[in-house]
Length: 230
Image (cartoon, rainbow, N blue to C red):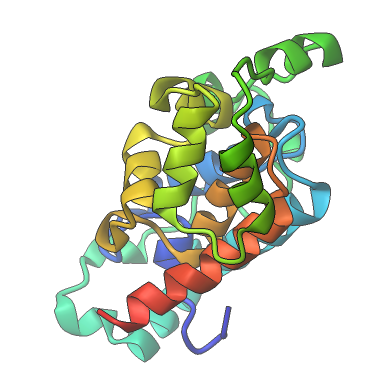
């Protein structure tokens, strides 16, 4: 992600006029979603993939989570010209550090504790959860093997072929049904920043027992091509 093109609000999936409290919540949600012990990512994403996304999340919060840095960032990006709210001057809710080092009895920690994803599951349970049961179709399998450009339409076809409903896909990946549908329909306005889309496709592909790295890389190139045509 080019530093000049980074939009830290998009990285945290919030609006530029978000309050400090909303930024805090978004930061915690994002960290929880890509933490190494998240059930949503268990057996789905590599540590390197998670670390790369977490790096963007930490970088974003280290800027917009602090009033002075945020004001300068907004000034450079032109957000103040859109009537940025005065509550941006409020003090940050905490410094950037690992969530594990935060006081367990803090109000903020308790408020968002329900969002923490329990990760105490056995490997056998995970394998059962992500198992697929479908009748193999040679023609489709050959198309999967020979595919050189992964599109939302073809991913949807494979999902339906492998009898994975959108509801089950959402449950296994913790990707919203709205984002799954938008990804399959290539509905760009309804999808988040590229780094998240790549993470979503990686998880989606791994659930379907595809090569997640190859699929994610191909899809994001296709996704960028579609955006350039808009």
